[in-house]
Length: 495
Image 1 (cartoon, rainbow, N blue to C red):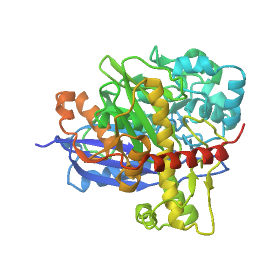
Image 2 (cartoon, helix red, strand yellow):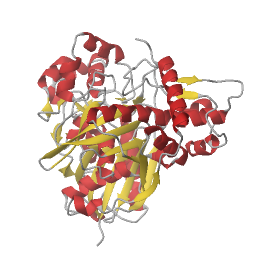
Image 3 (cartoon, rainbow, N blue to C red):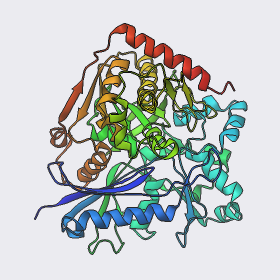
Image 4 (cartoon, rainbow, N blue to C red):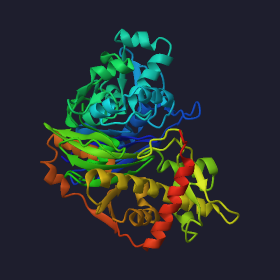
């Protein structure tokens, strides 16, 4: 009987479930958007119950649409929005507060105080991360400090912390399993990427009891089995990776020096650096890519906070498009940006600027500016941010980028991909299956249960859809870069 792998892709704006067969083909997809909460400027939250209920509903939809059940699923792989922070009651599973999303900036001032104390270098050496509100540690601390009774309950061992992967596993196993994998742990600012353990000094610094923390496992092993009524049969949960590391694996960037960029809500560019962490000298992050067996791979990462979400803002905030898929057609109605540059710092700027106080900026507007110019400039803003990270990564790695593998929703936008190739001066390669985040989770889970024989078996499934070669003349590229540089100066906070 044919077996399948079920990949759960729990993202920032939607929950998805994708069923893959042994050939790496997608057999069914179900997706459901869920509510974004913005209680104050700079605050972004999700309801943990809605994260779980939306994921549970798409699981049911994905498997019933092709008439399969738990007995037909060889394993479940999970990939998730990273850094997003959940705290819940260990006995009841009830969240004590909404999930604080990775985009949330409420702990920015506290991060400034840590920098002022001279902790930047020591934290970076241990975690590979810069001090920023982006990561989980300051979010956990905020919940313990601001939710009535949370600190006392945590000290009494009654609360659990998890990133979204941990929350899904907890619910899938009805509270029997509290785990995370090394890739998600490395995004908390509490995990020592050299020893691969929670760091006691950092837990003490942030006032977080060790009893809250999940067990850290590899990215490909059987963590437990489902207990939920979604499945009539128990299914092994066998793969976990943060969404960007999962995409790196799904793109088969398994050799040092290989690079991918995912165009999702944010954009995340990762370079596999092999089995030793490289600490960036150009304000990139060092992160654990994955652990399979006893082998750990590391990556350099550049994080862009606002990528595809700028298109959502054009749709929901400005109302200049009806759906996100309309942006390319609108942008193509004008031959160029008309001198308009859009710095999409809607939640601050990530790498390599790390300015949480930067503000979005549409620069160069004149009487002749149209919605189409703004749409085109928004797409270009995504590519410019990626260009800045490629430049920093080339300096750290000491090599020129020759190829950039791309995935994620916006990678299907041909106008954006061509502009990206022009701005980085390297070919941009889009695979046939752009669902590489879910595919990475699928492969990790399948490897753990012997669904595939090894990396060679799955590498043969990766296929190219289209290659975008740089074609713009150098004068045009230089003008675009100068306009971007000028606009970014205006968006930065000056703090």
